[in-house]
Amino acid sequence: MKTSVIVGVLLIALGAAGFVYKSFSYKSEETVAQIGPLKATAETEKNIAIPDVLSIISIIAGVLVIAIGSRSK
Image 1 (cartoon, rainbow, N blue to C red):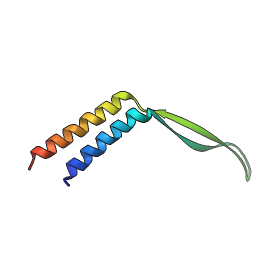
Image 2: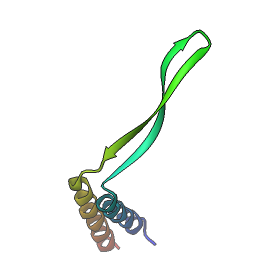
Image 3: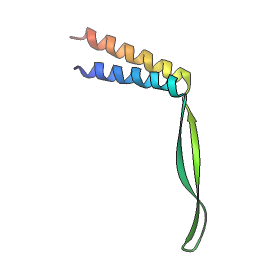
Image 4: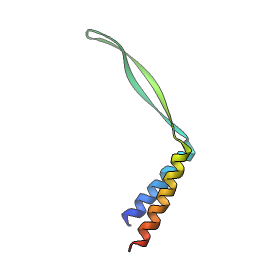
């Protein structure tokens, strides 16, 4: 397979995943206080939203990459 087709399909898949999942979250551990060798930490969950515009741009870019890649033979 051509590299452009692989990149295009990945962009389209990422754009579609953005529409399906809308956001993703991850957990991080933050230091709350540290006194000498003792350290108090707290685990926090952060949520990141995926804008619909970003998903649309990703899908359009994937289609364009595939179209341009198929023309240059």
